[in-house]
Image 1 (cartoon, rainbow, N blue to C red):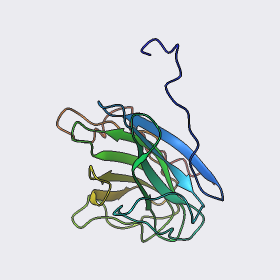
Image 2: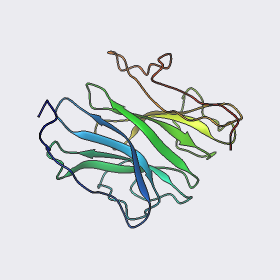
Image 3: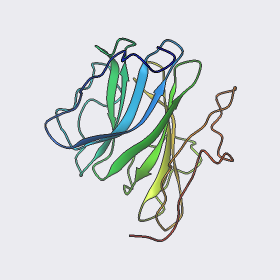
Length: 178
């Protein structure tokens, strides 16, 4: 309920290896969008999804959209390249497009033509990816970063479905760690 007194649903999902959910968003219909990382080649994906094959490396991003009852997948996809990718935060617009931020250490993370930054910049770059409403394709996907350690720890969108990079919600960290 709206007061948080009743559990509507609780569920498990994942594969036979390590999986971690980092971000969750809910659309106006109550569908839950979850992003994180998986090392499971058998992570549950759906037919027609953007990427249905684990890409290797250590971890791939996953984006999973659960129905409002939590008992079925609307779509579920990998997003990866053969190195390490992590989905950290997710948001959804009024058209049901999913926006995720995270990080990668891959020079071949799937970026789109004409994206803000189509080249890996070194060590770890932040990533921003917009997935279409059916989970079948990327609307855009870009790197953000310099030569150090960057990660997108948040993402906000405005009423026009623009990513708000000036917000304190979207953070790129470059602290030279690791």
